[in-house]
Length: 484
Image (tube, rainbow, N blue to C red; front, side, top):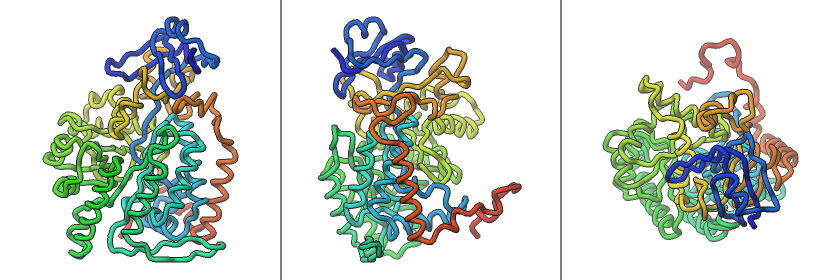
């Protein structure tokens, strides 16, 4: 007997042979896949008390989002497109104007969004940009992890230090009053140690920690005082040493031309490193990524991908590993990885003016098995194989934009969106069934998120950032978004 039997659907395994069963079945016992194959054979060998009819559906591995930001879910489009206002909101909220309740409510909202879009695993940086981390004390990371746990998704939570100089001012709220205090690098790294000890590998290994340190780019090396650059180097090495000691993924946000080479010179690259954005890399850096076994997370819908280009085809041809990320859920992008797969294909085809680049199956790999590999989890998730964790998504193919009923994998990658997801299983538990969350009350999640957003706006006085800018209507270019 199995616990759950999924039968009658198109099963795309993304295994080593990339097998697809036109009428397939999948059996799950506890948190593991125990059989996958032709419908009749699997159903006969593995009867189960819970049977899910997958007729008219694509059964596929859960999608993986390699890069996103906790906190953004309650800020989203604030500033109306003005990047300077957006970052001001992030920095203020994430350091001196947020409570554990804020981080808990945002985590539940973001996890629910992922769940509804079939994203069973995601990386979430505990803050915004590459240097606004909420790691002054463990309460905020605890709140985030608890929120994700309740919704039922799988998460890798990246915590780390801010860029020098230190100390940096943070605030905790005592009886509704913000009490500011200086926070040192030592305080931040101790917070990281505490969160790793509490959460890494917990709850059936659904919750894991990663470490992040700010990326040193050319503008920092050339523009910061020498003492701050040296402090940044020292702190990056300390955080990298802790990642190796603790056996957790090491990530950095916002790489661009020159910064990957500098990271290589520092000795912080390797198979357990995940570098986001990585735009305009030199040929030397492309081969450095491949030679060190480092992983790149490409965020095709991000602002960074407007300002520069991550050379994904060149990296793949050099033998490097690349996965996809949303960089969500803000300021103009969601956690819908179907959107980002489509964006990825068109982005690079336009660059080369050649529609043969990045076939649909390749970007689906980047969102499943390649994402699992980048997180060091490819022996557990990323494909539908016997012995692996049961992270499974059922995509409803009986939709007008996905018909006629043929070429289901092409249809899924080229036409589907997150709202086509019908059922999601994470770690063998049904977390989403017939387009409704199972483990949490969706309305309660939404209402709490709204309440915490309102409280944040009251604390910050940022309600003006919700106003519709004059450039919203009738303009060819939003000139009020241009920074002079």
